[in-house]
Length: 92
Image 1 (tube, rainbow, N blue to C red):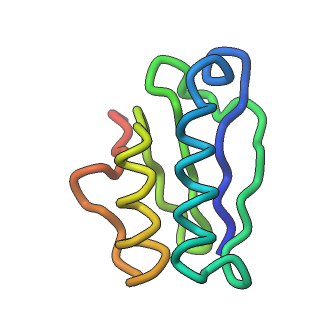
Image 2 (image 1 turned 90 degrees about the vertical axis):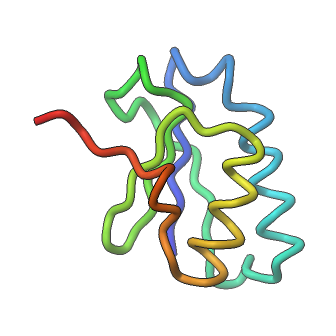
């Protein structure tokens, strides 16, 4: 599983606590071997940041807080269930 965490210009100032929460939650959950946290560039949703994209089967999360990050790890990464109420659905 690959977890892309936006560190673009608009998210960079807000993403530090989210990155720390993700890193710690992945380590504590024992999923570090199958979950790769990746610093990404801008994901093009600056007004909705901090943003996280998880692959495979792209799932997008927006406005992620440290508490959201911990929940994403426990439910999506560990249990394999995207966190429905946190999933970003674009307005097409």
